[in-house]
Image (cartoon, rainbow, N blue to C red; front, top):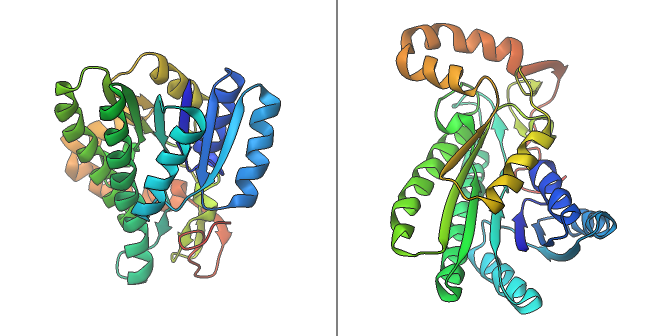
Length: 275
């Protein structure tokens, strides 16, 4: 199987690339850091698969088109495009610098649009293919101090649902949405931060291997949506059906459970440049 993985330099993307390679797949690794991608490509080859490195900023439409064209040129086709690339910024809405907020939206929303468009054009041309978009449980609820990230994930969930309706007219083409909850990855500590304390995944925290197993499952049996996280249904239920209770508790819970006690100066983190 030929799988393009965006956001492959760390977190869910890296873990998924290694798991796919261990299965014997060829992975096309996309991310902003050539150094990181080269290292992960070596790990993928050692795991038993083949790897192609393709430095890509998904917020740039032309770079994404080059990525998909490269994958086809090198591998002959694309069976799955797994879109994991995302950035995050913590802080009260009015405290996050406008340029940081806008960059999060550009990477997370525009990047997803760019990837989806290029993938679906390729899949339509070859008559089959599977687009997997990594959303989040926060695409179904709205915790505070992460407004740009929450906004982007709601947008991704909406786009995925619209695309699923449209591809019904294209037999062989599938769109899946993966919605992880709290996952143990570096995204929290590498995020932009304007709240003074480094972020952390609130409990219960799932190991990234649970997400990779879900991704492997989706690649062989496409489904509309797959949630990963024991607390996801409870959080979504509280947000939707007990909004007054949710609003009364969520700020305190976020401060206690979603932010570590480690202080930090204001920083854009990896929003503009990879770390």
